[in-house]
Length: 472
Image 1 (cartoon, helix red, strand yellow):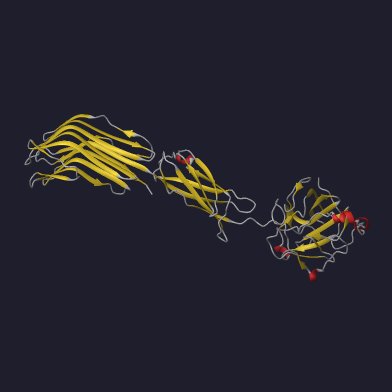
Image 2: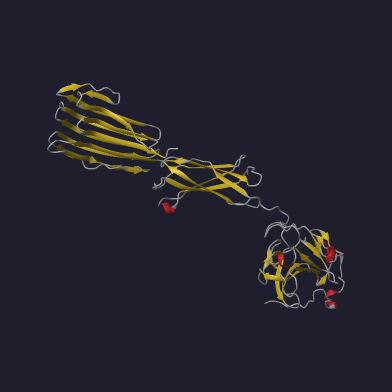
């Protein structure tokens, strides 16, 4: 319940309440370390007195409406009593123990509850003009109910100057609930500088630099926590933390990255410094690339524009494209045979297999035997064919194994890629054709046998493609 006190500002209060204090030496020596009841980070606060009794001053920051709403802070630790009226408007009275009290009058708002325990520097209300003509703070300081010379910031403020000779008073009441006199915490900046690309199954080194915002000095000995991933992305959130060194850099390691591959191939990263008494909280966000691979293989594909019966064979069998950052594979059912007028093949298989730690993919196509007999060209025979392409962020490699005959004659195949077999002017036959994959960090398409003609025929037997992405 609010208590009501009777007081007339600028007038004479009841003699019993305002008689000269019976000041004994001991209570005054045990006076609390009263601080000015306003924030220390604002300049322009002044005090004066137009009262003819001890223990009261008026405090202004600007003038008139400029003062309204400014925080009013507890001058010392105390117990709250609330009141209103008696020409005092809304007020807060704090009991500090040992007979000491302070009162804060004409408040616009009372921001604490009756009976609450407050700390020095804690906001108890806002400056206003309730039951006053101009917004200002009327401040009382009392011992055993009697006004005494006001002491703030270790100074005796008596005798009080009148309004024309107001004096400035600098506050050290710096932070709500903090130790009075402590400096305000400094603003900080946090910048991520760890791995820009990570791979599932491998460790990820996360790092960030913590510095002061104004002076750009490194902040040492503070913990920075890291969150890798997002539940919204369908994966797990992986965390670690590190302490900043002399350069302000904190690092830690996620020993085994395990993140989901998104359409844009990125993983969210948040670094956080929680803040403390000396430094303000700061965060840094980054989007790390997730290394991933792609692969595809097929046994045979052909497009032959025959005069009477054009031939077109889609890739058979075809794995389709595997795009992944995990360990998985694709392997459609093998094709027993392909039989066409000018093209025949048996036992065609295709497979793509990816692994992690680090990410890599291998695409493989096999064909037991095949023959190509296009008009105007010698018959090309193939057996024991295997085409293989492997890619990681480190490298791409390709290989081909087969036995080749042209017009029934064996052809010696060297290890070098892109070996051309002479078929005359009408056609071109390339064995172990290797083509880099566009748009990939590493990537290679390997066609075991690729036959083209001037008439527009295009036949591929045993194709395998692999590629690695977002490597750096």
